Amino acid sequence: MSWFSYLLFISFVFYGSYGQRENKFFRKDYHYLESVESFYKIQTIPRSWQVAKQICEWEGATLFYPENEVEANAVLGYVKEAQGYNHFWIGISSLLAKGVFETIDGLSLLDVYNKWATGEPNDGGGEEDCVVLNKEGSMNDDGCWKKHPYICKKTLAFLEWNTACKMPYPDYKYNKELGRCYKFHLSPKNWTEAYTICSSELSFLAVIESQAEADFLQQLTSLAPKDNIPGNYLRGAVHLGYHNRNGNGWRTIKGTPLENSGYSRWGGGQPDGGDLERCGTMFYNGQLNDIACDRRCFFICENDDVDVNNFDDRFADIS
Ligand SMILES: [Ca+2]
Ligand SMILES: [Ca+2]
Ligand SMILES: [Ca+2]
Image (cartoon, rainbow, N blue to C red):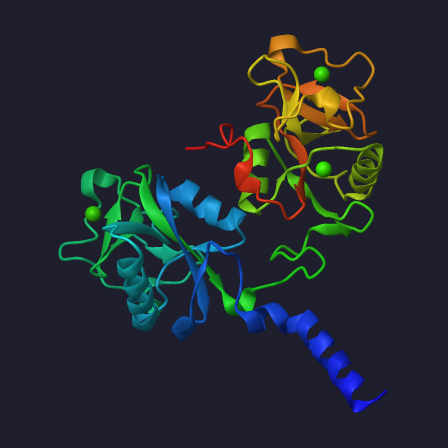
């Protein structure tokens, strides 16, 4: 090959493997700070400490804590510039052993940024096991159930890019015929949690819109290594993005009546749950089944690169 096509080849390979790290892009809702080579997102909806930690993980990130003074200053600088919050949950708690504060990845406070406010930690009321950082850079232990804003962090070095799906989640599988990406989630959740997790991955609970898509999801399900996963959940069905939560008939989460969605093939005798089963699933054989919304099962997320913010978000609330 000519040196030019060789160069093209090299840059393609290089781009495919490292391109997104070179571009320093994770998600558009995360802000990159060059001095610490990491991405940060200020989460403005206050949450309990555990939910904050969970939401960061669902986004493929972690609950931020400052590793050192440099990072504390960089992030607090960004926070001040961005908006005026007074304090944030950080990824430090003494939930495992009272009084022993550790980071979410098990580091001792001796190894990370560690600047307590005067008189803190004081374990007020005997029930302060989670840590907030105030905008002046000092820490305080507080009740974990309290709701505070928080910051999620993604380190550039840990960024993985799914080139086919143009997203930072490697587990999504690209289907060329459908022009979409899907992920079979192997951790059983109820319908609302499944909805929220898909949304956290910039995707949505999968909506079947053709027989070809049904066939593919059925195949994806049959290939998923799901058979030996323990736990109390419904086997034989996976959550999908349709429901009758309002009792006004079955609709997809995009708002389309199910019968106009391109696929509405119910399993034999389904739907059979009436008021008790208002959420949508697919049997492993590809046919549809209504289910109680609080039943846990596997689920499939779909990404078609559309603006998922336009979807009906009323059911995504977790507190
Ligand atoms: Ca305190
Ligand atoms: Ca679809
Ligand atoms: Ca049913």
